[in-house]
Image (tube, rainbow, N blue to C red; front, side, top):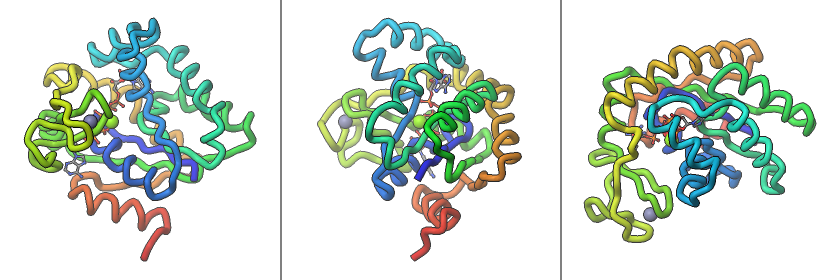
Length: 216
Ligand code: AP5
Ligand code: MG
Ligand code: ZN
């Protein structure tokens, strides 16, 4: 399976992506996660990316596309992949098309998740993440077993530094201007699946599975 999951910040892409990659046993390629890892490892690219991320802006296309190109050369993507948060503008969508054409492969599905802005703000403000393993929780909707502590490794959970409300509003604006047009791009290609992201994590997953023909 070669899948893209797209949608505004905080709609639940990463949460649904986790379920899909488990189901299909494919790598989860989140450009946001890659940038955060590169920063954690104190790389130059990571430091540059962090500047943009903290401001809620997109990391420049040349950096982002290069990272994806590199990632697509790994052996594990032969069995498929799930892109989460990439492509994020038309230029990136075109760059990805070229990369896939070179490999002689095509996308199987583009999932577009939607939710109203108030719900997004609520989800992002309640989000807590583990910097050690990347696990994502929510103070009401996806609680860790012990409050404020990661289930997997006992790390203290934190808020992402781009999750301040002013930064979130900027991310939403950039989403509308730059990322939303990508929906039309894939609509023309005929492979898009629209998913109502307002429901519970379980219900969203059921909708996605059904749309992908995985009913049982
Ligand atoms: P990225 O990390 O991709 O962030 P984002 O797109 O803004 O999306 P989020 O990760 O914030 O939200 P999500 O949709 O994954 O929601 P989640 O599942 O966590 O990118 C960060 C930054 O990196 C960008 O701003 C940019 O600077 C840079 N970047 C990344 N990719 C780039 C690219 N291609 N080009 C240029 N720059 C790039 O869920 C949110 C919360 O809600 C969680 O707490 C979760 O538990 C909860 N939740 C999820 N689903 C549900 C549900 N159904 N019901 C109730 N609660 C739910
Ligand atoms: Mg995410
Ligand atoms: Zn953890």
